[in-house]
Image 1: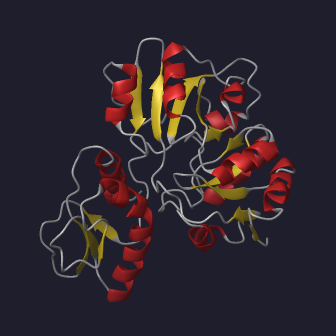
Image 2: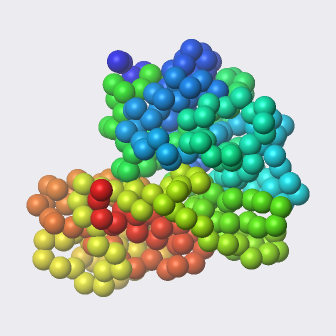
Length: 320
């Protein structure tokens, strides 16, 4: 298979939408990471996503839509969900909501659950593609399952060239970290995955406690597997010194021994944006140097630091 590069400034959006309508796979930029899009109503197309990614079939996919009216065709929105949508959509927030009985989505999208993860992306290229396609796109990150998520079209091509139909090159992703995922019921809001919208900002909107995940052994949303985002090199977290045969990915000032620094100024937004791209580069640096591990400096557990540490913890988890 030849993987085409589509230019969003020309007729690329229309051509990519046509590929999706025919059951093809198109990677496209969102404000978070590049997603691997397929028609969420087409079971064969969704199966190709799992095949291309080597993804466990019990791990559900996020459905991307252009607007709230379309989202309501697939999921039930209570008042809490509508408040969250009003505050953060379009943007890096996914809501896990009860499925409508007439949703029409492939069962592979929901992995057999009675709920669906859904969001409205903010990126103009994603919005243009969704409007041209006119329906829901199932779109996990456009990388092999468990590996580092792509934030540039070149990252997608490194991992997926020859496995998918095309990539829309929309430049680097601004947020660079996947969406926050919340499960919303009539009485509770649960954090299933930290991401591009901070828990603090969410709490200001809903004015209630946010619960933690119930049972990550049965994922109710993407990103709940313990080992995920893993480079080929082992990862050691909260490193305050560098051991023999390690390379250092640092955070903050005064890290002269670091091979790379997520943010020299200690800016968590900058660190989130750099995380996946730097993990990829650090993996190559470590392998070229014959290092045994990537040591990562401590990152504060506040704001986007919660999401950054979540990704780093999964990257460092024992490999299956």
